[in-house]
Length: 418
Image (cartoon, rainbow, N blue to C red; front, side, top):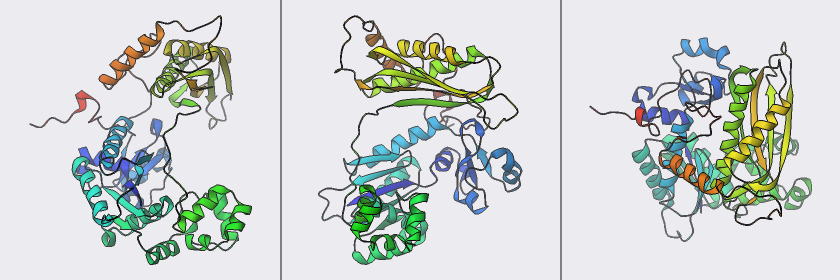
């Protein structure tokens, strides 16, 4: 059996944990630089606030309806997510973290368990230990557990937040209820093709012949069909190293100052190097990109990128940062106001198993230095040690005018009980 555990309105729920005054209130969470709405509480949805709404257009609507608008507090959300996922690992060792607010669980050897009670126990423990409400869907396959989770979320009074598909009758009833466009893994284009074939529900999709699905689509769609039929074909994803690592950010404002952009590029490159070291990898290629604001048509536009090929693989922040800063200097244009920049590292190989260069190699002092920096930054949960060309006060410079405190990751923001 598989379970999908999904946190309800996760960003809004995290804010409510530490500010009880927000309980039952409409909440909207904004994207980077306070641009548009990326998360809404059920109350805000009911009022008609759409997902992706640009806040400058909907500011008056939010004020008129008493919607609390907050900046994204990613350190808080990331820490709360980690706590939820660690609790889930107490129920089974087979956990796939699917996103920041949901995970798949596989239950091997749980043949005689009452899964409805087990789901309620998971839900209860997460709520008690973190304050985050969840819904749990349990079924014989991953795709069906997604369907079961949607049932639990849609009908909380009848299901209590937990729904188990453990019979053929329940499976067919759930598939006939869910629209084809709401099925996990079916995007807009696939939905159009299936509806042209007469598929309005997930159940209609399962009635198509295997041969037709294989010929018309791919092995992925065939696996999804079999999963919905109750034959498990989609397995838990094994953790694996990434083939490319990117750090890209939009700036809080547009900038034409090369020194500011160099500092940002150095910070992005350092972030990529840290991610490389975390997965035990090194890179051969560093790609740097710059882009102006495409929505400001009255300004000069410039979008460009360049790559630097290294003669030996590295994960040193010093080397990757230097390469990235040199690269951005070569593509920067005077008079252009830039809004976004990014660094991508690719050509990734294992740090402990790669081809050596005969005449060129990394300074042997870099690896122990990087190890010490990572240890200190991990210990103190913050980037205390940085390169000299980085801003010592901030890592990510974003417009966050409505930011709540970092209750769990900043010692100065911890709630004091008097």
